[in-house]
Length: 153
Image 1: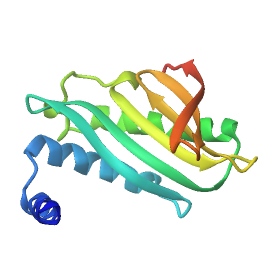
Image 2: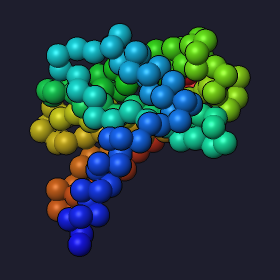
Image 3: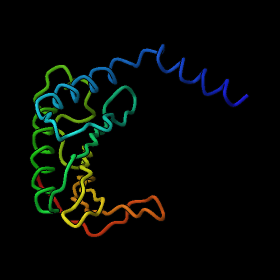
């Protein structure tokens, strides 16, 4: 019975057409991703949170294929987050679907997974107006917050 439900859910997901506000916001973030794409940067996920056919928050999850320091990861992440915010705020097709006229760092979530110079699986994340540094704990399969900083983009 469980296999049937999973197969049905997958078939429904590929056939169902998302609402216009979701299509427009996904297309906008995908367009932005094309402008930052490099061979060592992999897109893990894009999406958003929506209410009453309006976009409340947009997210982008990335992975860097290689090692870098946490300092360089933060610089790279902030450059991407600034670019994403600028793109969102000037996208004429997306604007009518935004819940507010101008998005800020509190309205986006951008994460960058990477391997530190010490070989540790790590992540730096812009979330709710903060930069959050985490490491991946293989024993619990969870991210552990190392520290966070206030952010103003």
